[in-house]
Length: 435
Image 1 (cartoon, rainbow, N blue to C red):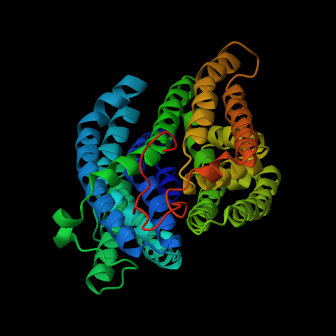
Image 2 (cartoon, rainbow, N blue to C red):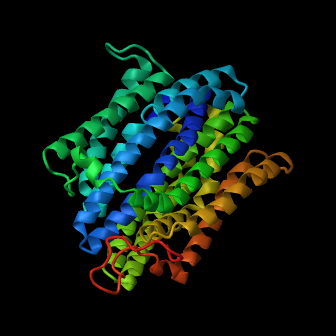
Image 3 (cartoon, rainbow, N blue to C red):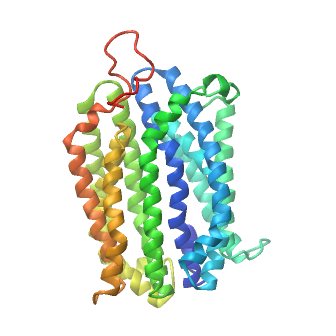
């Protein structure tokens, strides 16, 4: 949001370019979910079943694979940023600024994945406060460096859009250094020993992590591709419409990330309670999370309805962009509570290791978005507002569908730990038809 607010002072083209980079960056994080999403579920279930040694082995294996995957993604992103923007847009300014930002951002993938792996370990062991404090430091640093690097305040050169990416890079390096300091001080919740990786690395855990995480990765990648396609359609209505898409996406992220955060807590509780053979308590945790997110998203929904123009002006001074963003805010507001349910119940299913239902829901509703947005925007009188209505309606569909799927209760049979009937139990349930 800080990047968006500061870059929005440069031009609508700059704001549109960076906003499109955010959509592309979802692919970076989605690919990391191939490993990281499964870490939370498996470690939480192992901790709930009092298999602490096994939790340590899973954490070590997952962290090593996450770093290796990050190197691959960083390479692909560095070389793919330019071709991607040339494919999406004709405006040379948008292409140049978007390529600058995304190429730098992509190089951070190994650091992002290591950060996410560390967060998963802490959360799975019931400590969400430490990751919060670490990320507060990183976020404050990013926000403070943004205007210095973008506008060249003080001794810093004026880097423009590139400065926003460099501020994020510097902050992310500091975050990883803090986690490294906690690791070497012995403050990690699990005794991970990277020096003993060869002894603790388990291919069976890699398969389990991928099995759980791959659906989440596909969901995130699909979201990214769909939003890039929507950005392409929106770009046909001018830079102001593209800027509005970016502004509202950042504002919507207040609710989105709050719901993700509540969902992360729910995911841990569901995993630990299933590991302890307490499925009813796991279900109650998810419903409490949905109740909580209904309150928080409801409050922001009211703000979107009542003050759309003043909120939009925090990110851009372009009158056309402010007008489009205000219209979009009111339309997207009607979907916010259901979006929160989608994310909370989706994370609950992830904590149970049942990640296929969210993938099915995401595929159907995301694939529908592109043709529906094109049709409403170009073949009806709605114009660009048809794109906004497409995003809002499909978001509500996902929330209703995923909530109903969770309430069916089939996820209670997906736990990897806590259900072995005869001693001595295997550390990981044998793979078979039940997974």
